[in-house]
Image (cartoon, rainbow, N blue to C red; front, side, top):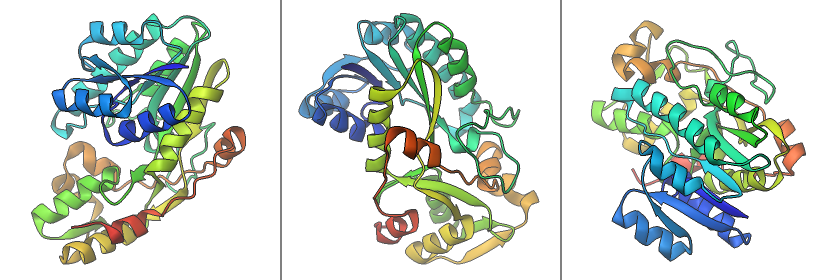
Amino acid sequence: MRVFVTGSTGFIGTELVKELIAAGHQVRGLTRSDAGVEQLMAAGAEVHRGNLEDLDSLRSGAAGMDAVVNLAFNHDWSNFAQSAADEIKAIETLASVLEPGKRLVVTSGTGLASGAPGHLRVESDPPASNPAVPRRPEQTAQAVAAKGLHVAIVRLPQVHDTRKQGLVTRVIQMSREKGVSTYIGDGANRWAAAPLKDVAHLYRLAVEKTDPGLTTYHAVQEEGVSLRDIAETIGKGLKVPVVSIPPEKAVEHFGPFFGHFVGTDMPASSEWTRKTLGWDPTGPGLIEDLSNMKY
């Protein structure tokens, strides 16, 4: 298959490009930088210059492809609403180029699925509608699936290795800056997690196996790791105190959008995904990778 990947030189994209090429697929990767060009060429991928905001570059990149994987997202927490709007336009643009029967893989998050505190999120749960979180990748994917595409939604947990760990990376950065590792309340709220290489493998399976219509997958190895365990591991690594703050101080400490996620209990299951795709994640757990990283 010919596969166009946005975010192809990012954390997950870099691993996915290697995974796809090793499986015999032809990959075209989107990049905005000279360094990205060199990285893609070294991996054996076709280079396509552009970015998520350049809709013409998305159209030309997706043209003639059998599948498109949208991994790109601007994680600028100071301009999160604009990043969310750009994501919606990008998904719509990519889908507009694909012919019926082609595949589109859209990236979401387990934290964007609906569910009250304590609810184990499953693939059949609808996307949440929360004014505090403006991202709408799943609602956009639902709209474009009607044109006859095979649309897959991959909900990501905290994707990790010893270099990066999803939202946990931001927690580490703030802990380093503030000199304290923080969790909210009793820290019992949980985040699902999965190792990088296993997540890249799931994306490849989604590209190859997704049926017509709309299908949602959960890239989850661990259903839930408590924020207290995460904070204590970070505190040990940074050699800083570990403290609890009350929920009403979360936004003040972590910021408006990020503060919402840090206090959210969002465990998730991947039982259906594993059975459907034959996906069997075997990599290290989140705490193991956090314990082995260089702080």
